[in-house]
Structures are given as C-alpha cells and as structure tokens.
Image (cartoon, rainbow, N blue to C red; front, top):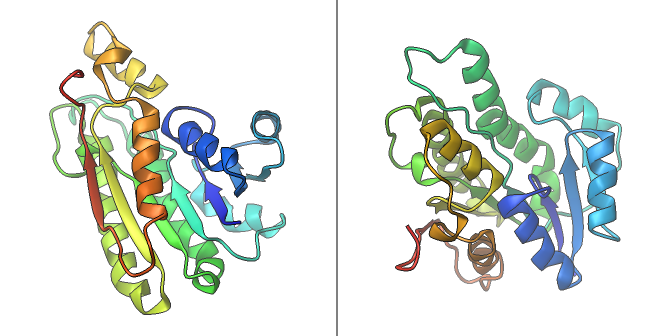
Length: 232
C-alpha cells in the first residue's frame, strides 16, 4: 500500500486525485489549512490522516508539521493546491503577489524540503500540478503565471538534484479545468461559465496517476493536458 501526501484535496483536481487513491485503498495524508477543514476531509475520506498546515504561511510550515505526526515514508507528494488572483500588472498589489507566490510556489518548495527524507526512503515521487500558465503568460495572468513558471523551475531543479536519490519529479500542465477556480476566473473575465467546455478534474487525476504508477524504469518529466475536441 502506497502512502501519498496531497494538498488541495478539498475540491477540483486534488479531490479527484484523492478519490481515486482512496478508492484503491492507498494511505492518504491530506494537508488542510485549519482544524475545521481537516475534520471535513477526514469525514470525506474515511481512514485518511490529515496534516494541518496553512500554505499561505510557508514560514510556519516547519513549525506546524514539527508538532504533528508525519508518515515514516512518502511514496508520492502531490502538490495540487493553488490560488489564482487575476488582474493587470499595473493594478496588482504586493499582497496579491505575496499570497500567490506563497501558495503556488514557496509552500510547495518548503513542503517538499520538509518531506524529502521520507521521499528518499521510499524512492518516492513529487508531482507538481502546474498549469498552461506555467509555459506561457497572458494578459492579466502575471502573478499566477509567474508563480507557475517558478514552479516549473522548482520541479526541474529538484529533479536534477534528487535523481541520484531515486526521487522522481513530474510537472503536469493542465489547460482550463472545470473547477471552482475556473468559475472564479470566468467571473473575472465576465464570461458565462460552462463546465462542459473544459477538462473534467477526473481526467487530470488520471494523468497524475499515470505518472505516479509508471514502472520504476521510466520517469515522466512533463505532461500537458488540453481540452478535447468536445471541449473548449
């Protein structure tokens, strides 16, 4: 039975990934921003363990995890949580930049650092659910795209550093996915939101598991996922 640590399991892609791993009987450790959220996740995924850690405060992650029981080994660390606050560069405040970079980049880096010993023990796998914005930046996506470009650099550096320790690293770059975040983006864009036009979170979850379940003689570095012909 494999052990997985997952961020963002409360909705969207992270929830879809957790559902699939839970259904097959794997051991889940779900990261929650507070005790209330942890209780919700424990009820949603019976048997799962929770870790309370606020990704908006990466400086506090070491302290928070230091006061909780951690898994002895981690077969996969799945970074799915993210925030998207859009707007032109001329209007984005330092508060927006700092929150976006904290959740989307600095927290994944710190959480990875803190769990590297357990990942090395199991020759584990780190998966970063990135975004198409991690490969290109469009108008009004400056802060989000910057955080996701940084996440790609983090993944590439980590892969080069941890290869000899047997740790695999994969970045997944989904296009637009039918999640609550996407509904918020459409509201910002003043467009009608039609979930059926975009990628189902379960399809991205299947992609994540494809990378995780790949035999040990191979490693997927980068995977791009785009809406199909029936989508947008």
